[in-house]
Length: 109
View 1: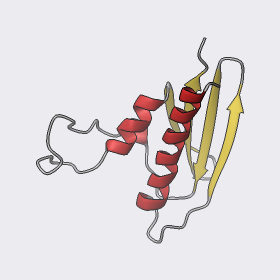
View 2: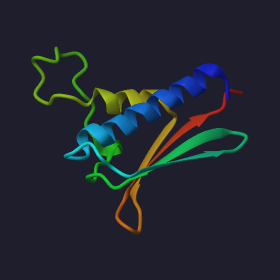
View 3: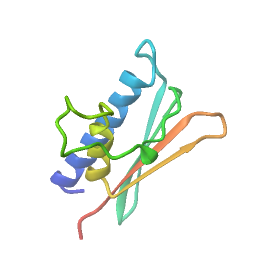
View 4: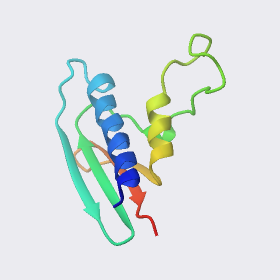
């Protein structure tokens, strides 16, 4: 994967993991597993964690045209950043009740 694309995927993964630690736990501790899956068309990173359930694919789009001080809902910029950096974002819950987020970045043609 070329530099810009891999950098975008890395930034999206960093944001997802940061959100798990900062917002999904009370004490900042969570068991997080990362797997990298790839083929000739794309690279995917699967993140599994035992933090509080949260589906970023269902999160509302933040009010980007409104000042952060005037918005009804704070936050949401990290999720929006992930959406814009990757080609696909999938969320599910594993059989053992853990969060599973998959971020997919297509390889440049």
